[in-house]
Length: 192
Image 1: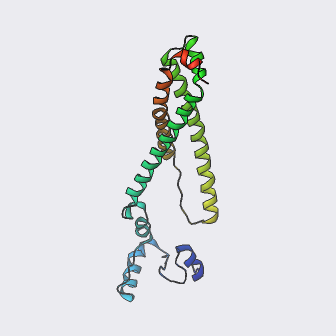
Image 2: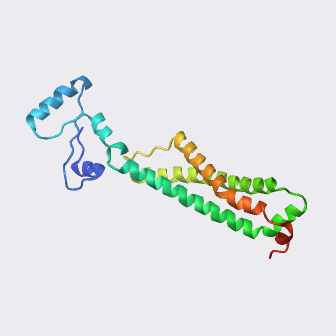
Image 3: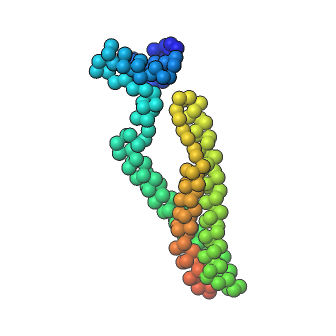
């Protein structure tokens, strides 16, 4: 199979260079023999089967990439927790009068905490659904522009991201919910 050099350069991201040649054996069992023949003709050049080449292109073979990815995930989680905390704290401040009404009609502290954490979890569920949908949409756009790009969205990653989001929502809403549950009903009712 012959591919125009311009097309191959575009596929491997090496414009104006010929850095990789792909050869397909008619019989896979002759791959080693063909590789030895090429090594004899082109000494000093790296010759490897495609499966070994693809194994080199995983994220585990790029030095520091795994650490960078984990750092970015930790940063995203920290920012998410702060955003949830700030949102729920603002919600508590804005609803001080409503919390006072609930407490004056007999709502106990655990009910107030439960209501605010449930609200946070519901918002998180909508966020997870929107995030997964947006991920598939962005993936489709990337694949339309770069058909050779491999983007996997697995169920394990969706579950892991949802678990992190829900844990962040519950943790971020806990302190504002606890503050709301401790408000005095008389002060809360007089709050403007």
